Length: 69
Length: 197
Image (cartoon, rainbow over all chains, first blue to last red; front, side):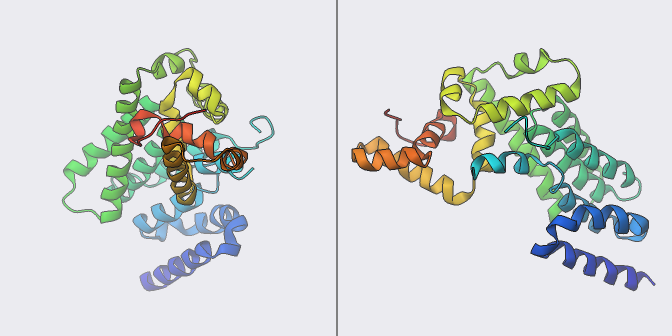
């Protein structure tokens, strides 16, 4: 069973890394991954969460529009 | 831009704080440190130096008691610790009134938002120059894509050598490169040359 969670983590991670998935990352994380995050490897979960946090008003996203204006 | 942007640093910090509360220290110390370091870094970038320091200290306390962690965890900790001290040293070196600026605004979130607005306003070089508050400039500098940083350093060198023709100087100005030169000339960045306007 553990192996299946591991595979699911890998698949979700793969999806998050896809360029076209960027607009949906926060939603997929909060509506899908949150339901079973207890079962994931905590370190992988932390890495995933940090990746997602970059989509939520990170310092980089705040300044980016000013750079590329 | 500040008014129209939907961005709110509080949301970013809230997300990370929430994540941190779900990945407890007892459950997985290394994952906890990883999130804690990221949170500290976000606080640092949003100008909350004291909050950042508290988290860095907490992260170190945990790391000190754990035998082995993944390199990514160690890396996240040392990155934020290094950036924190860089900002502190910069601040002392330039004699800026960072803490005074912050302590005027009491509530934590207002402080962070205020600092952010200030950071954005500081993007125009004249204000940076006149306020001489370059600790923010240091952070802004690191947000720039590497190609821009390279071109700034290059343009900076040209300006310093005074080999720039008036036409080229004009075109550089059009692309804000000369403005960033001024940023690059901040002494703590360790770049040589002087900006000649």
